[in-house]
Amino acid sequence: MQSQSKSSTEIVDSELRGRLVGVGHPLLDISCEVDRKMVMKYNLRMNDTIMAEERHKPIYSELKSRKNVKYIAGGSTLNTMRVAQWMIRSQGATSFIGCIGNDSCAKKLISCAKKDGVDTYFQVEKDTSTGKCACLIVDKERSLVTDLQAARKYRLEHLKQPKIIPVWSKAKIIYISGFMLNGNLETVMYLAKHCSQTEFCMNLSAPFLMVVPHLQNAVKRVLPYIDILFGNEVEAKAFGLMMGYKTDNITEIAASASSEKSARKTERSKTVIFTKGAECTIVAKDGNAERYQVPTLDYKKIVDTNGAGDAFVGGFLSQLIEGYPTEICVKAGHFAAQTIIQTSGTDLSHNNQSYFPKNATLLQDPKAELNIKRGK
Image 1 (cartoon, helix red, strand yellow):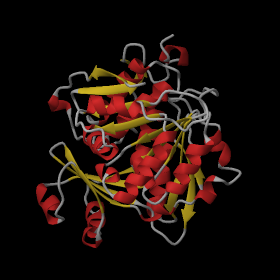
Image 2: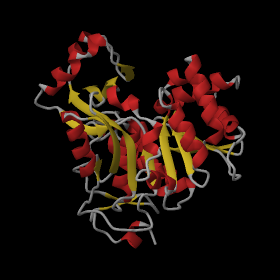
Image 3: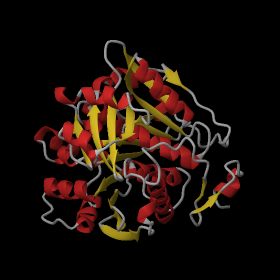
């Protein structure tokens, strides 16, 4: 099962087609604004992500019964691909590989991804439900409850299929979230070792990946193959502790991480990018770190913070794929993250703004010519 997408607001550029590929856990985000009583009912915490237990299972049907519920193609990696596609606005620039079930949630997920312009290549598990994520939004904060289901069952055999190999082998950038290390390490390592001519990027995703012993080992195994490592402040500190850096200063952690040895066949610098919310973004390369300030955003404009980190990566990669320098990529990341937090959930389907990389201004005409969009 696979979806190919076309959008009337996108520009065709054959040079960009299939250049950015995400491999990860596809989830149907079931997003809804709720009251704190519902959060307390399921013993949840705001600004937290947990894996669903049996006691959380009714939460999905409860959200579906609400009038203001939204269905969004989600999962960390797919969110990043959707944002990158929205920023690039070139047909087929982004692709996503993962595993879904054969059910109504899968149909909704495919439809949402297609609407957002992301080409999808799914392994289908007929006897397992599609993964889903309950997104409870309260006063601009969110609590996420994830039920991976089929998403965890992605198999390396699918990646090796003749029709799938060209999808990832011809990519300029391959992006995964750290969540893929939990149950799909074999797939991650295969990609890492077989994409020597490709920028291989990973997000640390969650602190527990640097705490649980067998997941710590997984992070350390893939680290030498990573060209660009993303993370937020909390994840960065957990990473530094795991690596034994003996500091909780994330600028120093980023600098040390960027100096880690590479196992890549072609010599290249490792880039480490850590975000500190509304304060700044730290970018380190070859042991040297720089700080980029985040533009000020009126707090009243924030709708909810769900997906801000995924959006930052999507914005960053959308400009990296077109060859822009780090400063422009970071600005694009900030722009994408601030756009998302002014949006309910991570729904960009009705946002027709276009991004102008050179000075981060908006072109109101989404059909602007490609050479204008690139700032030439």
